[in-house]
Amino acid sequence: MKTGNIGIRNLADIGVSDIDVYGTRKTVNTYPNIFVLFFRSRNQSTGDLPKIENKKIKYDEQYDGSFGFDTYVPKMYPAREIKESYFINSEIKTKIKTKFLDRNEFKMKDVGDENYYISSACILKDKEVKLQIKGFLERLRDSYTIDKITFKFVRLNEQKLPVRNSSLKFEDYTEENLKIIMGKDIVLSNNEIFNGEITIKAMKEYDDHIGLICYYTDTEGKEILVGQCNFSPNQKITVPLKFIKVKIFSNGTQKYPENHTFDINALSNFLNNKTMGQSSVSVSIPNTNVEVLKMEEIYTELNTTTNQQEVKFNLSNFIEEVDLKNKGDLATVFKRDKIWATKDDNSEAKLDNQIKKLHQIEIENKLKNSNDVVTIYDKFKSKLGNNFTKDDLIVELKRIYFETYIPFYLLEDITFKIYQDNNGSWRWTEAFEANLINSHRLKILVSKFSLIYGVDSYSTYAHELAHGLGVNHIFEGNNNAKIQNEGITLENVMDYYTSIIEDTKVFIPKPYVFIRKQWDAMKAYYGTRISNANKRYDDLVGSLNVKELKNDCENLFAKL
Image (cartoon, rainbow, N blue to C red; front, side):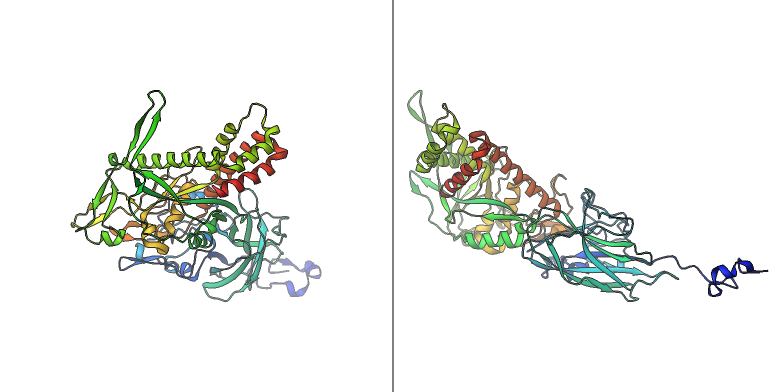
């Protein structure tokens, strides 16, 4: 006799309650399909913002730009061309229906894939942020019931994936660098979509990559991964800036009076708290005074052979004075009746080279006339070598200065082309930037746009500073971040102030977002600059004296 599939002689071994007499009991061995995504705000988690509304950008006002957050969800940002730069967790399978993340403003189509792209965050020390959770739950017939999902910090491998300390558990990140303040668990219901919130605080500065995972524990005690967000190192890299107004002079007389105020402290706070701080780049301004760099209309140098002054640069070859009367509101915009404007596209580079040259001469002269240089030379003379002169030291100090500091040249007297558009209106090009980076010096020409419009365009300085730290525009090349004009370009710092969206020119007034690849590029670039400067210090006096020499030189540079 057999009962179901079990012989009668085996009943004593298994217990009566285990017998399926009619063979109808179904085996329950599956789990529901579940995954969670991380977002910076509720607005972003709905897929609604930023978006275009009445030909204007409606921003995500719930995100203030005070911490770094970067996510890639194909349903939300289908036009990104850099998805290959995002880490993928193949343990987590995703499939988002269009109705769950709808971006109608971008004519959202059923695009995307089932890869789970890991979000990235960067939080500065003592900063507390709330991340939004959107989860998708599909309970299968006869699947196990999952009551809750849990969050914790874990260690990551080189691929930025969680490390298992056994076949069952993920290895906890035990250092108290990050802390979950609220939202350690989410209790699940039968809803297909669920939302949550988790509050994270950075307790310290750290240089690790830390994973925040979301998981549940199955009946065998194994932790099943359903979501992941990685936290980038938040150890600050400090970038010192110098602000220099370039003023036009004619035979020693200033061409135009001062007409713009410039609040360095307000700008510094904006950069550190709203944009550059997203990537743990800290801006310092050792000298809070805006210096003036005099630029003569006609620049001459002495020819030592003929003992005659020779014209090396004539401003009139590259720019022309424009009368702003009868040119719309340009006189109001520039707060004057006349202004210099560049003649053509090549003028920008010529002007940039002259400004750079004048600045280098000025720094060299300041070093030559500095008593601190004499003190440093006498202090380290025995380490520098018998044949190493004070002039040799000045040459090296000038190189270190331009590798360490980023000069912002503020052009008030010059703008880049004034022209009439197709409608006959007089306009000026919004940006005047020279962001080419050579191997030994950083240089940035900040646009008049910021000087004129003030705080609302502080992001222009973040844009130019990022250029000075090796980051391209988002529409140029793919070595940093190439993104088409859709989705995140509405708010990325490295876009221009206008974008063509669906054949419409859209004005982007306040871009304030960097993505992770841009964070990494800035930190890596300036890290290399500092390494080069440190090597120069080492070559000068040897490793045992580097710290002392560097400290003395930084105090000197702050005074220049």
